Image (tube, rainbow, N blue to C red):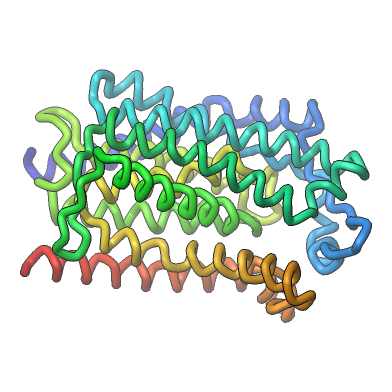
Length: 348
């Protein structure tokens, strides 16, 4: 496909995705408010979330399931525009199942805010481990979609060709999907932070699609840039309504999707090293939360004032917009580093 046509299709797909999301974002927002899908920042009995409530109590009353816009718009548009393409089928499947789980998880979180017993149960280490187990089962479904629907049978990991259509391959993808899913979910904690991070990361993938077109070939008439462009267009509309003060928050229905989607893109394009670099900030944010959880459980002390680490910076006195913009800037640097590393490895 000529380069100019690839760029044209990419630009067109961004507008298509944006128009599709814009066509129903207002009625969706009205429904979120009508059914009171709103965030409430309430102290737990042990006051472990006291610092978080201090920082975010003013945001109570804002709907927290705005990720529905992404969860439903992307797969519907992709299936209408690009039917019968294995990669698109895998993408739609992942968006549907991960988004649905995230929606249920978001509903449960709202129930927790209104029930003292549920709040106490949800704060327990054992409950967090149970949720981790459930999301691992979800990640196995993601891995099966990547291998058996998208048809990705192997990946080049720094020169080692690893088969993926084996039990060990499925386990490998499942663990990656689990960590990535939680990492992109956890970073959704400040107005505009997550959506901006996702857009920057997707632009990194787009640049690699342009640089390595043979790696991402789909069909004669459909380019990978068009698929990613649809997602970026939807995110643009979401971000418009999430700029402070946010009209709604993303929540798990949208945030959990992006880790598996980034993984699918990386495995399909055989750019696993770039994926590891691209995910650096997400992994650091996720690791900070895990470290805090285990430190409190086993050592009865905090490593950070509040976790994940983007809230730690808030607690140090940084305005949330400063945290967001600096995370965006660092992510740009990480993305360009990942591109350089991948292109260097491909040239060897």
